[in-house]
Amino acid sequence: MSASTRPDWATLPNLVTLARFVLLVPVCVLLLDGPDTLAVVLLLVWASTDWIDGLLARVLDQTSRTGAIIDPIADRIGLAAIVLALAVADLLPWAALAIIVVVDLAMVVLATRAALGGRISVSWLGKIRTFVLMSSVFLLVAVAAWVPSLIPAAQWLLWAGVLLHAASGIDYIVRAWRAPAAAQEVEAPPSRR
Image (cartoon, rainbow, N blue to C red):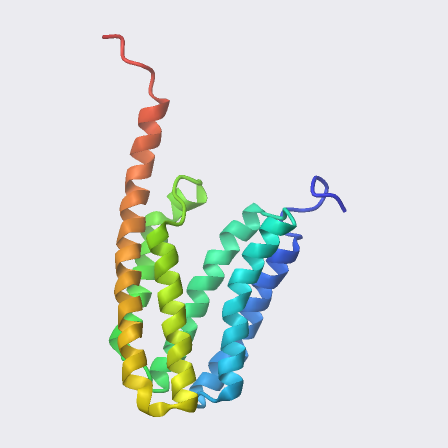
């Protein structure tokens, strides 16, 4: 099926993104039971699907509007579920979970329209935030499974990710609020002065 006749949602990258949703259940269940080697491996597989779907979309030229919508949803839901599981397992302060969820909800409420309209895109701050936050979550799970004495150090790194998450969320919302005004200025007819 050629790209012109294929439905927008029918891509290999979107299938990988859907696999991320499916993997989330066993990852969270294992985290609730207390991280072990299998939890570390599945979390790594889960996190790698975010990189793999993007790579496949570029290499196979299978970018899609559906993918642009479901990929960040998979990221937000996955991160919230994993952080919730870590908080329930008493590996993460509930305050960190609250900050992540509040920032994500604020972005959904205040920036979704601009994001879906293509008026804002992911910033470098957002990419750095994602890397630090996901790396710190993975590191926290790994040290909880293999070297529990390092949990406090991993929690400090996670707090750095949480702060970057808040800064990136604020930046995203501010850019979303400015985007419509900038778009209207461009579309306005030139002044006759």
